[in-house]
Image (cartoon, rainbow, N blue to C red; front, top):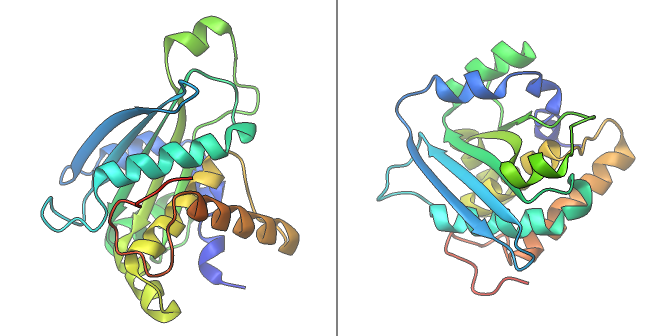
Length: 212
């Protein structure tokens, strides 16, 4: 069992998303709306507080493409809506340790935190569905911890970052792993998400050549 999976628990998400991500000024912020073939719009805001524009390991367009395909894959886990919105923040150990201490009472760095915004009884009127995208929440990843884990596990940093992003997204749409069986199912789903965008352990962050 890997300890870092437990750090992605959406127990960290109770009312945390807005304040956690807007208090940090020094991030490059990208926002884009993509549509699937079923006209489902996906808006992704990438807040990169670690890389600059010239050194970004994974381009914003690649993140957009990945989340677009992942949410299409996860439609059965989502409330029926005309569009969805989420944010991804790439940061360092210091910042994620502050968030981990503030929202999970664990004063240590971690790899990924998921701040889920969905409510169990979210209103689903047709007017609301058409008027605005459904906000799923925020994913925060420490690039420094991800780099250490990638080195330990013998795969690329880009693969580790995408793996953690997929894990965070599953938490945003309601997945959790309180026991061995649910963890196994969640890991299998993460593998399926990465396969859907052709991300392999040696992936270096270029846009996948073909998306299934």
